[in-house]
Image 1 (cartoon, rainbow, N blue to C red):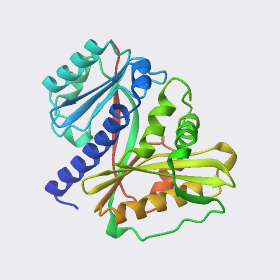
Image 2 (image 1 turned 120 degrees about the vertical axis):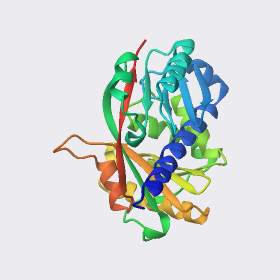
Image 3 (image 1 turned 90 degrees about the vertical axis):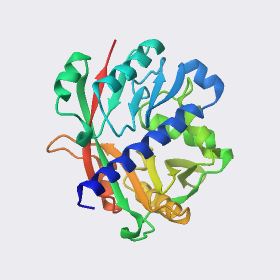
Image 4 (image 1 turned 135 degrees about the horizontal axis):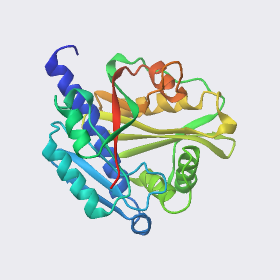
Length: 275
């Protein structure tokens, strides 16, 4: 995992698996929700360009998954966002892939650097199976709980539960490529997390715990359950991402992933575009 070839391949695994689960989230959402949010999804080169014109959060219009970054690619991405009338978009490129003249390209196209995302990746056979310790019941999400699960995840991330986002998350419960998990306190669903299976990679995403039930081990147990599900599906790698904290600060989601055995690979900047 130390050679340039290995590093390039690992970067591609991390970026393209994330791009694919994001594409499936937005392309697989219920038609009514997609229409209300103004969603359109595009494949470009080996990456994806996702547009949500009426996104109330500014999070879901993003372009990612590319193995080669050029000024021409940036221009094509922004042409799509202009055609979609997107009010804001985020371009996400692994730092190792940025060309030497990236500062000039970013300035020319009006891209400003935002926060950073920590990308994590590990071989599954290097992560010891663990149950995670919690007094909550943890298991797969059944279709009858899809709506409650989607609403919990969206609300915990501070996003509006009405308008289509919760329906988008809930739809993944019955999607064949996803494995949704939750924690319950009695009959109350209090935490959730998703796993997307992409070729040899299991992508851990959407980990969320209600504020009333934090510090009870829910996320550690849900991460462990997802890693087991990835192993059962024959995955060789596990990938995740979390917000990169500022110096001197901490992100509990990132800490949980590292504690579970995932290794930080790099920090990727969000490049923000507004028309």
